[in-house]
Amino acid sequence: MTKSPAAGLAAIGGFYFCYFGFTGLFQPYWGVYLAALAFPAWQIGILTSLTQINRIYAPAIWGWLADRTGRRAAILRIAGIGGASGFALLQFADGFWGMLGALWLATFFWSAALPLVEALTMDRLRGDGGRYARLRVWGSIGFIVTSVAAGYWIQARGVGVLPLSALVVMLGLALYTWLLPQVPTPRHSPAQLAAGFGDILRRREVRVVFGACFLMLLAHGPYYSFYSIWVTDHGVAKDHIGWLWTLGVLAEIVMFMLMPRLTARWSRRSLFLACFVVATLRFLMIAWGAGNMALLLLAQLGHAFTFAVCHAVAMSYVHQHFAGPHQGKGQALYIGVSFGLGASSGGMLSGWAWEALGGQGVFTLAAGAAAIGGVLCWRGLARD
Image (cartoon, rainbow, N blue to C red; front, side):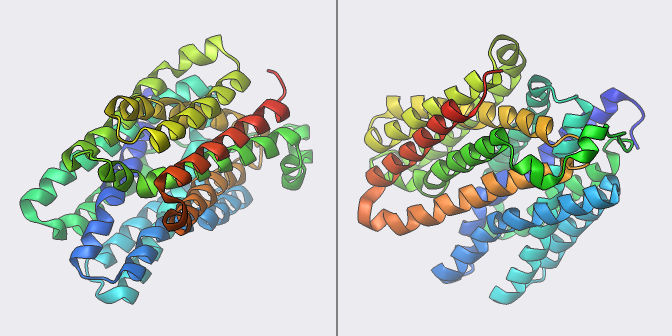
């Protein structure tokens, strides 16, 4: 148990570093590892999608359990131990079904941890989206550090080191779940206790924010699945691909650091609307300017808004509406609707449409989804 506010925030930052450090390790190299083991394409598709699929429903289960029992700290520790245990089993998994079982176990617990820590963080920061962004930046740093380090490590030792590397990162995450600050059970106001979860979901602003976040991640589906393939087909060298991705994450880090200034100057509604305008332009540039490196660099800088600002503002809305006894469920639903359902739907739909429409058509449709999200926010969000 941490003993000071500074130590508590450091533990939260360490958790973000490990959680998204795992993503930086897993997302770029997991498919390469499976291909090296000669899995057929359909099995690789299932094994690479399992993480996002689990994020659709698993956070809701754990969030409901945390709100129901009030034992957020204990559930976080269970999630950390369970995730590390799954990756320990993965070291011995042999064949598709063994690997599927171990990975399902690991990601079922792994996906539980983030919404609970997000709720804890926003509690501790009293809903301050600017301060949240500066703490969340450690996740972006973790992504860069592990993805770059793993590239050199795999180059030197072979892709077979990936499962053990993932286990090491997950053990770090499990450790931080024991160091996170304890949050006393809050005293809920009569209004918070009277509001049912269904009542909150029926609020216009909640439905607008969740719908817009779904559309934003739906638009990102082609980006996460086919961006590297699309720009490579247009002559971008393979050794430049990693730098394009890194530029996007660096832009995200800078924007996270600037969020306190932005939130002091601009309303949440204005910042949220800006995210969808930038997303629309960004995916149009990728669709129609894939052969132009200047446009690709500019589009990657847009990640500062389409991810960093969008996520920080959405977190502020979620914390406001799901304050009280529904925090865990609210954060879990946000993660499930956006990063789970939105991202996985975008990836699958873009895969189905790629042959018929090509990259230009798919990324143009992604821009259209972002534009619809912007209209939804413009019409549905009240002025702050």
